[in-house]
Length: 475
Image 1 (cartoon, rainbow, N blue to C red):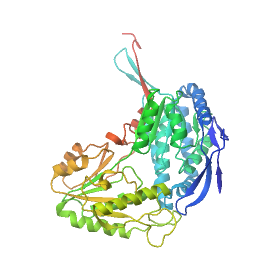
Image 2 (cartoon, one colour):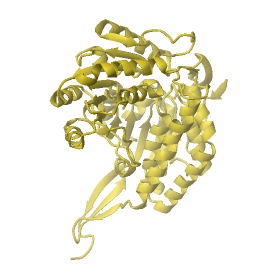
Image 3 (cartoon, rainbow, N blue to C red):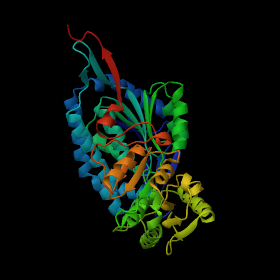
Image 4 (cartoon, rainbow, N blue to C red):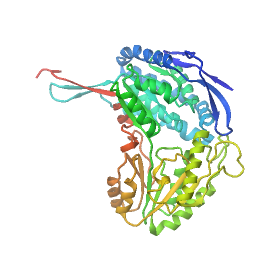
């Protein structure tokens, strides 16, 4: 069993102030694979103090030096990618192929994206002939990241923060902390100055709340559930620090009558990716009534053909969900759905042949209405709800009838309709006809899906303050 009790503070691996062991469980086997420590107030205070002490010098470091260190980090990341893939598979159950290509690959993609965005980024902008607008690092940033796409979220927060001159304290998810610990080792190997990057493990009620309320923290960037985002906002309110949130989603995938013949299959595959543990998953499939029966059949066939197995297994398949807590939550919501709608694939319990591990059957419900629990709540598992519609206006109304607004999807060969509907959808992102987003595209949502943007120039600007200076130049 791996021992990972130490924290990374002020350029060193240090013991926690007090023993507070927490087991890390391999979701493929339900066996303990590691042990970490949960930090307490003394650990949080030490990390904040280190970040505060490093801020003045780091914020004044020439951008070329910061870029060189990030480029060195990228080299380390690529060289040790296999280690990272193994850590992610072990901690949260991502299948080996998915872990290597997408989980680890997301980190490389975003690091390259930030380096590209940084090339032409200006921290000084002329407002008038005599007035200058300066963009300056906000200060010490607490970065609280989730377990479902660990490197995706760590890179989306750490890199723009340090690139713009901030110093950081990372708190990875205690459920899947191994990738965060390994990333801290990458930062150390890359040679960042002491105090620029710090990492403390802990849970939301402990270190998460302590960082959110800490007077020495200038900003909190959080990715996770809407419930936790609300709690963080409340904890941060007393110190009026900036809070950037990337929260839940209940994405709609609108399949119009002229959509690609396999649009329903592609939508189901996307829903089940990462075992359904993605905030931007298209979990509500809205299908024009003329294509509805066909789509239900295709989605059910896709679910039944999806192989489920352990993370260590090679090939394309679906792994377990992350924990017993998540497994039980998903099972309860599937049970609720069986009382609300028509089950056409999957259901409660583990897939056949799997009697241990947090494995969930890919599940499809038909004849869903948008007022049902399974259409309202973010299940965060491989569960798809299919809803029929008759008109474009009805599809728009159903899509927008949710407290969330992260990512919606449109499938149609009519370009005018595609653009027209995209303008009407209340979400931070709209993916059309399966076209993925470009490097540096802004990631974030409306409503209860959050209030910030990550990636590229937008992600850099999240960590900056704006200062107006008059009389910069003589008239």
